[in-house]
Length: 338
Image (cartoon, rainbow, N blue to C red; front, side, top):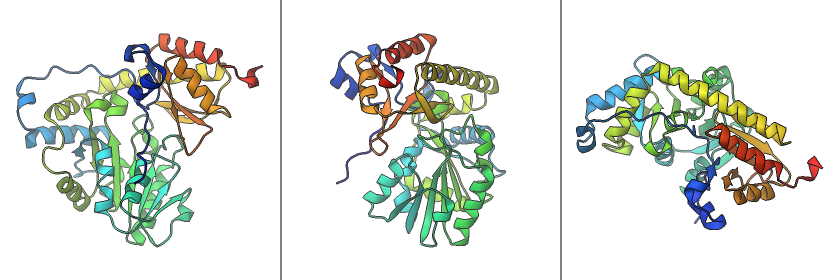
């Protein structure tokens, strides 16, 4: 059996390995807004009733406006986009092309299902045997983006050979120019995944949305079963996805923290190799030592077994956390700074 895919956010394991309590640590291992939106007050019945269709519709309508969905396309609420990634092998036949390196769950799920998977770096490597192509845009962890026009052309290429294109836009909330969410449904073979928890800082809510043509939308809905998303998650989504002033404040705060993180990394001599508004990717020839050094200072980052020179660093929640990160990095014995 294949080893499970490693993810960021493994704070309990870091505590086991390096000590301390959760409150002692700064977790920079994920690409999640570290300052979650304030939770609205939720009435008692929302916790005790199964989610009704009207609640699902309100959340879906709010998502349609926020993601700028095409007319008549109703974003499907799902229990985090990971829940749909796990369904993909049973929904789509044939060989799979994945633009990578990228979020490893895609490759892992198809390989566990015994499917042929090819990692590709460009559309020119797509062949007529591929029935599904998967693109994470912007990419995680490199932050590379494919322009909207090129993504649409890729969808057309896949359609011409009877295939589908899945575009994972988990980190696209602050990069709308690369999003093809508004094309899903119009291009009937294009499926777009959007994450709710990353931008709003509510990853524990386990909520995402799928934008797709009716046939694919219905196949995913049936595969995930009834009541897959909780009533409280839907109610929170319906409210915050409709609150434009709140969204503008979140975007401003994220950009401020991202710029502050970049300053810390650059001024301590680290090379920024990529990233998105929610994380930065550092390239370093001593990543293992740097990762361990930061852990000893109770700062958790994300390394990658397939790219030993990469370290992903998420946003700090405050200036105090940025100061702690700076202090730890300044103490790292790096010969390049000697």
